[in-house]
Amino acid sequence: MGWRFSSLGLQRKLQLALLLGTLLALLLAGLAVLSYETSTFRPRVAAQLTAVAKVMADINQAALDFDDAKQAQDNLALLRLYEGMTAGALYRADGSLFAEWADSGKPSSPSRPQSTGIDFQANQASLSLAVMRDGRELGHVWIRVQLPPLLQRLPQYGIMFGALALAVLVLGAVLLWAGRRLVSLPMEQLSAAASEVGRTGDFSLRVAKTSGDEIGQLTDEFNRMLGVVGERDSALQLANDQLEQRVQERSQELEQAMTLLMQNEKLAALGNVVAGVAHELNTPIGNALLAATSLSKSSHTMREQITGNSLSRRGLDDFMASVEEGSGIVTRSLERAAGLVRSFKSVAVNETSEARMDFDLRHVLDDCMALLAPGLKHRPIEVSLECAAGIRCNSYPGALTQIVSNLVENAARHGLEPIGGGRIEVQVLESIDTGKPDSGESWLTLSVRDHGAGIPPEHLHRIFEPFFTTRLGQGGSGLGLHVVHSLAKIPLGGSIEVRSQVGQGTTFELRFPRRAPIGQL
Image (cartoon, rainbow, N blue to C red):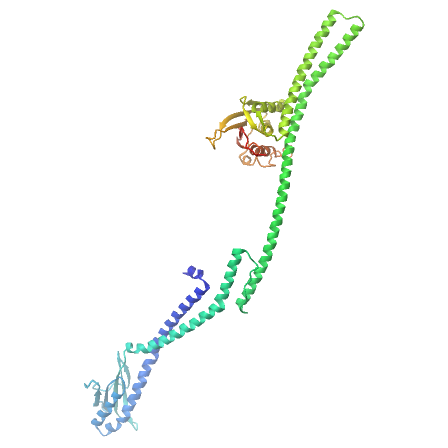
């Protein structure tokens, strides 16, 4: 009930308060009538009986003096003139009955006079009064009156009750009208204005002031509050616009910085490959240079022998054998160097180019493994590749090479080096798109697995975050796996997942379609 009352409108609350006030007033009126009945009715009856009894005592003094019972009888008969009188009697000083009267004609007076005073019974009242003359008691007069029942008195009380109720209702209606005009309407205007502001956000709305009392002050404060909130809302909107612009600018700057960092990461990886290739090229080129120097010396010796006419057949055979051996060494060394240069050129073009092209996946991975081999040759780490020949792809070989290079380097550095070395397995399997099995689109799963230290569970969900590294200050940028994750989505259009257990190794699985989605770059 309290909750329902609190949710009512102000006008309804005033009406309910008026109704309750009216009921309370009527209840109080009923109590007033009951109190009136108790406090005033009986004293009035007693006063009336006393007055009538005194009249009867005065007019019957002579009858008692002269013992005139007939006159006393006639005098008592005058009681019929008084409303409600039913009987009366006159007693001598010795208490004997002198005369009596009854409206019914049947004597019903007591045989002996009652004690002086009034006696109330259920529906009647009687009074006994001494008849005195010059201080001498002549006798007693007794009268009885029939009291009207409460039902007969109800109309009188009803008139009083109705008049009071009507007055209360009229007063309540006047108060309700005044309350609505002075309180409800201004409050409804304030409430409507608040609802309109909340619905439209128009803080320029104002409520007209109708009085100078507290509601008028409330209206002024409400209007002032709207002005203050409107100014703050405008300032907040401006600040939001400026903040949004700054966020966009910072986002663009961050995106450019991330792009630059990722490019630098790619170039850093390529630089590592260059260093490895340069080191690997040093051996065959050095061998070729040594063989060429030896051939130059042999040629110089041969020329001196020819000039001095000291050339022998044995010297010619030795020279020919030396030339054949030296040219073989030079040929093999330069062929090895040329192969390394071709692989480097292929990988370098792929990693620095964002072009989409058709390619054989096995050839791309072979070139990648060839360039990774020099960097791993002096570490106790072996890399194996399991990939079927002839898998044609229409995708981005540069992104794929970058992913494989980063994953192999990550497995070597973080997985195998802490335990002293081991084996890295690169495997490619073909599958069908599980999301659209009816499409027939071929997907590839490239996994890079090591049996190394593994990744702690608390780090597993963060390894693809940018700048997350466990080797801060030891050469780790924290971008390698983030680059892998980014390239897996764009441009390859695939996804990458990781599984790992501490002490058992880590597996990265890259799933990507053989034909990359259109518009990835």
